[in-house]
Length: 161
Image (cartoon, rainbow, N blue to C red; front, side, top):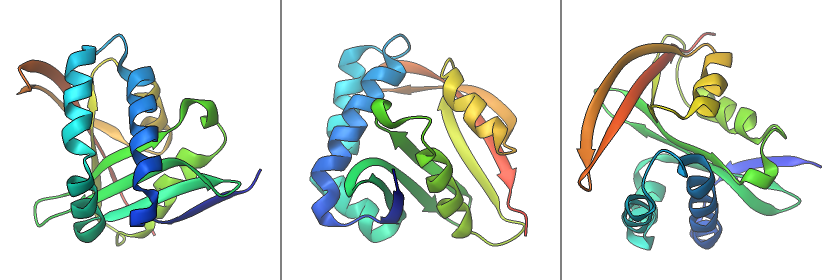
């Protein structure tokens, strides 16, 4: 089962939306209300937003047997390098896709750069995944999005040579 990681294209948008939907349902089923999930996904993964991600960020898909089953997105600004997403279809988790996507994202950065990720508290699978790659806890804070209070954890790692 070969894994391919490549830059996302417009042709991938439908598959990316499907992966986001299924991964969010599975990941956040006991953490974020379904109505908030649906509203967030509708906005964050609209065709317009996907075009924006494609144009302004490092946006990659992970494939198994030429089928898009994962994606990752890196948003870089003067303030920080934000790993805004790594999502893997639940049926394809633990097959190396998250690892391959994270390595691709890290390769976009220079030695000594800091990479941050923001997670919803209670997403233990993601916390463990990032800790395995050297990410450490920075802070916890609350933020209100779509009338829902998210308990957000910030983790980071410094890119090594």
